[in-house]
Image 1 (cartoon, rainbow, N blue to C red):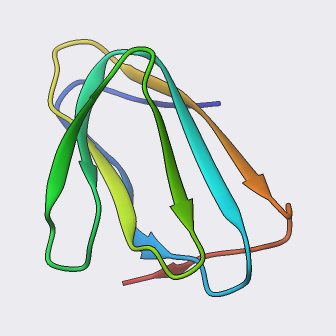
Image 2: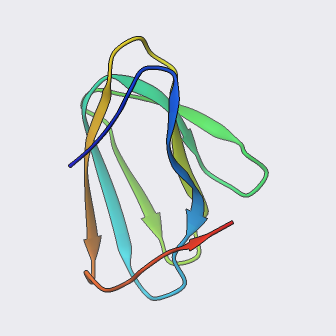
Length: 84
């Protein structure tokens, strides 16, 4: 489980090079989910599930006034990531 304070970047924008699926389930809060290397975002909120596949650039910014809490499930577990 991951948590970020209000108005902070939780994860640097990155991508995974190995074959994987990365699923984030938002448990609390909301923010902007980064969907590409240009910084395009889409809003996310409690209850949303977002999926990043191999090569998908992604990251998140907490834009709310409460902590953004989500569970990140990466399969396989040794997929690693590369910061951009």
